[in-house]
Image (cartoon, rainbow, N blue to C red):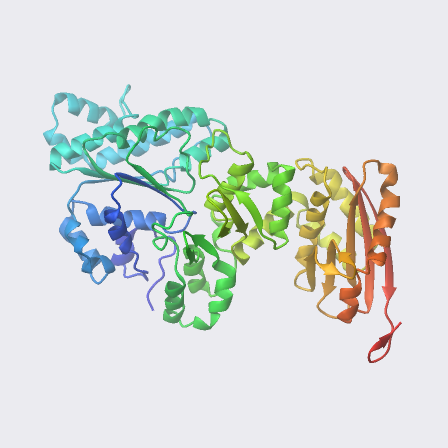
Length: 553
């Protein structure tokens, strides 16, 4: 069995070290058949963007062309007519995924050091530069005062064209990482000003450029980086083009599982890592698949990698409307939302931007397209579902509080359950809008969903004469079940009264019908009433005595 290339995203290294490789070289063919001069492809992180970009680098690069040709032996592209394009152009490869900083000054220093290293790689072209060009080159290369970093990439394309007499292919991987980092650290405007020239200038009306390919997670189009770039085509996960070039298809995953003698795990693997929709194709998360092949355990691999900071900010600061939809998703429901495809970090996060970011980042996926702007969204798989659960708990409870409140409930210690819940409200909900019942419902359901190893936790299903808020049904029928109804009041004085009314609603609507039919003998009814950060819990419990088969009292 071949070694798995975990953490290796360089095509040449994977091939040279004979690591397991799922052939994605059709991507080269797809790129060459795309007539646009500049292509921007958006995909979630760890979906193979860097691997595909390095594949392009080694395919096109005129340097070491003969040696690089061997890398493509027995791969798809070798049999394509486009193999004749191999090794025909100078290539500039930029990876911006490590360009970060707490301040704009820190980031600029990172950029300067990176470009200096890039120029050093092309030091050999200095021999054909004239005095003026040499001065420009050396200012960057030697990090001299007054060096023009804004135009450094555009200048480099000119120098390379002069040396090779061939147009340049410019590859920019993770172009949006510095922009996202700047947004989070509150210096976005400074970064945008620089990148408009740094990237936009190199790609716009550049006579020395054969083709530009950029990858990233989100689209930052309105910001004007690529303003007036009339040869730009943008391909997001909403588009069909390049739909099988990133991520793994069902067929590819099946073959990988066969190759590692674990094909019988396919259904579980699908449940955990499948569910992403790109264009009209359903794909698996490749990072999670390759890690599963290695350890053969169903755990969250992808969400443990870096890059969750912006998503966590969304969860912390989301509006009540966003929270209501997130609660539905958390409960296993789908939501209908608008995605324009025009996010601009300078105005994030408005309502529509939140959903676009969650979809483009891989935390939600498209279930169905309704029309040009409206989509039905869902959580793609168990891995992401677990991420939302974990973040929910981190945000509100902390592990120790969660264990205590769940233990109190299971033991039917309602007094402790109320006390701990009250403490959570007082200390952990300051960033959320508590004006609607949906918030408290979502909070309660999110907490109780951690009982899913011992209980079935369901929400908003019909039972008796209505739809209950939450039912906690024990998998072991000899254990106690719980029915919970949530209410909201405007005045604290009404908390106890409303909590008791919630109990009466459970009884009058016969919400216990479902549990009775399934043979649960002990049931606790809980009425939860909320007012801002205050709450009251009323409870009542019953024991069903089974006289004989088919009868009870």
